[in-house]
Length: 349
Image (cartoon, rainbow, N blue to C red; front, side, top):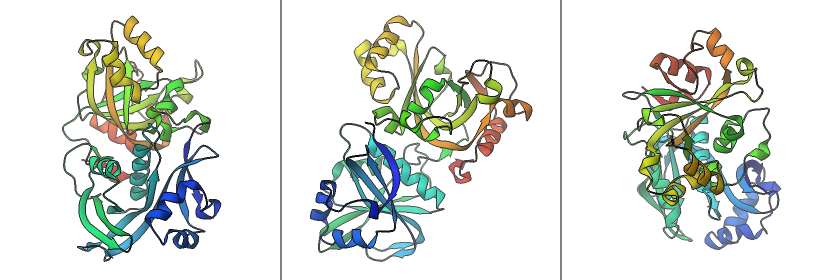
């Protein structure tokens, strides 16, 4: 059975679940704290039977004075408790994405998390996306480091500024994706008429980083370019009503087939972040002469999916050229993003 990230309340969980044993061991006050939070929300990762992750997020206003040095007065999102049993997938990235989504939704200015140094892989994950060590917190349980991430100051580094979209100095593209692959690759961009069960606990659906494989000349795109995904129709002849723009991504790099010395190199690069199976990938590499691969970050799902028909009727897009890999003007990009109702803070002009 697939695992999913879902919202629930503490009272729906049992403190006796073995999943919580390490948290009870690391924090003496954890059982009492858990009980106090009975009616509060948290996210869990499970398969309907077994817990494999939890994340508790809390909005705080003002200075954070229980750390050294104190953190300045801001609108903070605190990552209160976090545990991920990844089992070889990229669930950590999916949880990081949920942290950013929540912070932006709650209009936070910064995020902070406390973590023991022994959790080095978790620390590395946070630092990859712009978190910095800013303080320490000492309690009876020991000393934790405090990692913070500003949502108002930017470095210009695409990963450290994730999920913000820098549009100055880059090109913009509309890129088509078939319905069969859309939600498997972009799980937060699921459409209302798609079954949630499509979103499975496999690497490509739990990652911030995505790999798109095509016979299209993806090498037209460059690192930093903005990509709007266009989900093609699931019913022949009904593209006007059923094809939609759904997500915004940023290009990290593009490779052509000739840059992979053999199929094993191609598999090593694509398999963890592609919707295709190993057998399919081997077949693609062997049989296709024209082949390119774009690695991208998945920055935001649209809150409103605008149809092909609306984009045409509102004079945002023309029928031609084809909507497969199509360049966009800055004005087209901004209109599509605005119609998608993404958080306005995400776009950095």
